[in-house]
Length: 256
Image (cartoon, rainbow, N blue to C red; front, side, top):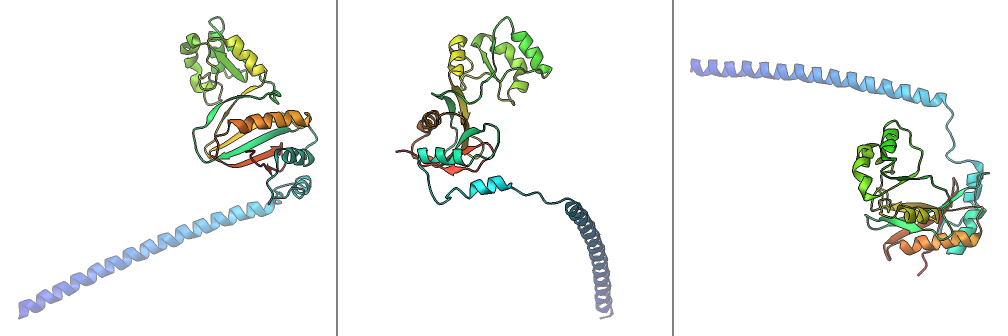
């Protein structure tokens, strides 16, 4: 009997020690959490103080908002109406670029297209051959790139590979998919000069392409827009929009 009482007393004492230890640890954890919470609160107060020191910038200016008010956002405009509306709502003083944006329901779309009325921006083109390929690689490594498009034959590609890590991220590395690795570089050069441009989707499955200048004749803008629409996969376009530089977008009807 006495032994049983001693055992019970011993268990009770051990139990109290464990509880006391857990309480102490819980208090320490709580104090640490309070300390971290106060530090976070202090940091947030600093951020808010910095924000209040600077006046909040308006998302859009008065010209943009006025132009936006001219667009019926519940309407899908025909090709002709969309071009008229984009030209009507341009907001910049310089000659803006007309851009088309297509939202697709599938990924992996890329290729080239010849804009029949020409490209809105003239590209600087360099042709890599056996005579200049070493110089091109050296200049690329020195970050001296004086071209927008680099054409090359398959024969010089092994040498150009030395600059792939530099040219690749800039979208300037020649590739068969983009039509910049060809045997006949002269013919490829003429195609680009006549309006051949590359297009490809972004991570959100959208294609963005500059197709004209606002100063162009309307029929030229329309010609390039229709050429772009033709390369889109049928029944896979979820949205088509036309806009000018820094201007509001207009939803375009996809011709059947």
